[in-house]
Image (cartoon, rainbow, N blue to C red; front, side, top):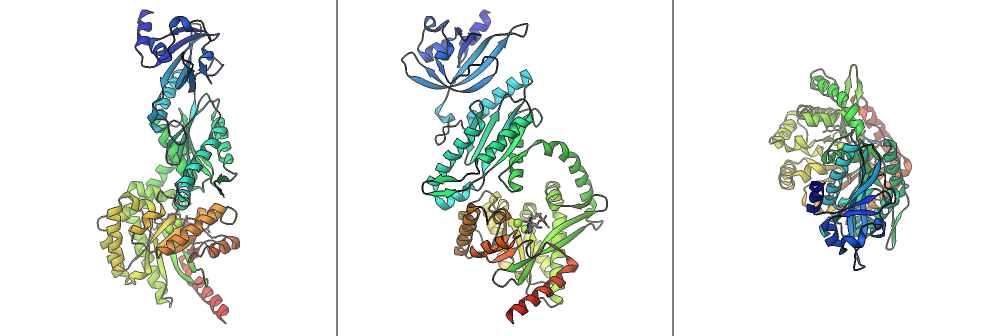
Length: 539
Ligand code: C2E
Ligand code: MG
Ligand code: MG
């Protein structure tokens, strides 16, 4: 007993042991020093008298923020860890309460939430406790959708206000017994403890998502902002804090990719994903030589006269047994395995060959857009390769447009700029694909020698119903035009979307409303039909 008592006395944290009635049975010297009480002041007194906001229940583990009332009647904020102690018969007769000081640097000044460092500490404690007691808990990784644009277009004071209000809504949906922390920027993490099952975590995620359905009022304006959430569960999705955070984070990115304003669970990826992945990877290695790859072409139209100005080449994989595998399933795997390099070479060459074919059929002012993955873009001999293909297929370099994403550039801005300049010198056009989904702000675009922005289809998707999408599309377009960039609206599916896109003065449209991606043998027919409607309109 002496040994244990000495150990407790050594701790930097305050320690209290209470009995089932909540009466203090022991206090270590750190606690006494911090609170100013003497042992006789507090032994056999109710702990809750000193710890404001602590739970009344004594059967559960609990962590959270409380106010410790000091002897001099002032109070300090403490982080407490509340653990019931079971005796040899499994009965709970006592509980131990550890109190740690909040260091200033552990709280986020804007929202007063725990910051990344404190969260990591807390998560480690929860992990130890859950491992010991076979409990499950969930990590929710949350990111505000399009926060960057609000910050950029409206300014920081609006951004800060939005973060504070968003944090309030999250807190209300989560409840006091769970932890909410701000990781930085517009990223928040919530840790849900004492869960009965995974459904609990999903219900809370659902209620957070729906708490964002009402607009935010920031000073004088109303704005709609949603949030995307990734959920990972201990122990299913990882048994250490870093892995749980990473898995929740990547599930959050999947939620964003699926169109934002929703949650995704991490475990789908881990369980179902692995096997499927292996099959795809093994087959993808042979896809090129077996001739299973092909290109589809989606028309891009001038918004003023609805005339086709070119096509985007989109890769298709038809496997004899597996059927059509969507690019979103196999391109990430091709990228991870490096197979994207030979596949990308194939795409580039065949897209240029098609362009030549259309030219020979009399359509000579079209352009072809080809998607480039980061790895392709970062190859040392990339520019040489492009030059070679242009020469080999004898196309006009100005008719070739390479689509890269923001992520490619962010990776190493200086070398990206130098490569982009070399491409511009050959005459090749560059567009930024899926613009608005990445990390970048509009500002850095000034530095980049690019020609075109393709606004991501998630903005177009709800442009007729979500005022933020409308406002942001208009803002992006205006800014892009100032920078002398062309703007393509992707994913126009309906007439209504088209009319909104027209109002925001984009230059080019691409989407199912005009045409889905076409098989190559349908392209010439489509071009003829498009020419006819245009001639009719002119007459
Ligand atoms: P992306 O480059 O943004 O291509 C546009 C995607 O949006 C295409 O999906 C297209 O079919 C789809 N889309 C176009 N209009 C609409 C619309 O109105 N509504 C909806 N719901 N969708 C529309 P797809 O063909 O499945 O390609 C997905 C992604 O795969 C592409 O996105 C691109 O990132 C990648 N990808 C496709 N081909 C290649 C390639 O050859 N190389 C590389 N590196 N990536 C490629
Ligand atoms: Mg693209
Ligand atoms: Mg795109």
